[in-house]
Length: 242
Image 1 (cartoon, helix red, strand yellow):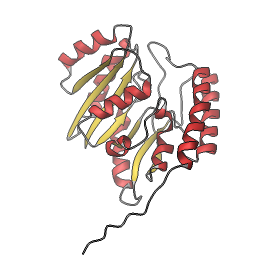
Image 2 (spheres, one colour):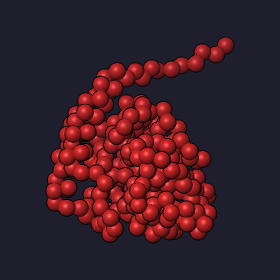
Image 3 (cartoon, one colour):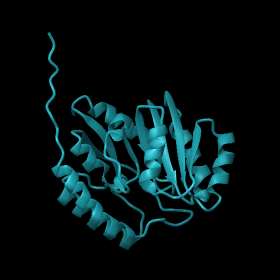
Image 4 (tube, rainbow, N blue to C red):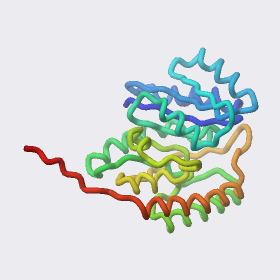
């Protein structure tokens, strides 16, 4: 397994060191890996904690956005900087369990033997530890997305995913695109499957994204993704040789 783990963070100083240590432990059997933290314009001690962590974890790389540009841009920055062909993303709040990464990778490699163009295994938080309101709103949002976009993904909001770097960099980039990766990969001719993963309660800090923020952004973004889907062209390509 040669993989780059990309972690976007904004004001997550209290969660950084423990999560990095968990990632290192999870990657103990990997052939090669790197951990790329993208500090998206944090205003707390995130930058200082990451600077110290560089001295303690040799696999760590740190990229800093001078101003906050949002989670999708942070993910995009990290993936562009990545050195390995496979990418794992996870949220920086500690609610995703890095121990799930090797399993998602193995599922991806195994299923590629029978599923052509399989490009992503998306984490599925089938047992979540969030507030009742957040669980309800997420369930509604996932149902609407699935119905309108046909992405057949039960949990597009899960930050834990393993996928092809090459495939990702060919997707159209826009703010909030991280919420629609399965639909965008399907639009590009790839395949996506979901795999159950662990989910944990947040122990430090608070969510940086409110429900209403996601709702209003989501309405506009879904309309945009539908527009992209309707204009997608997937040619059947044959090379002619003499």
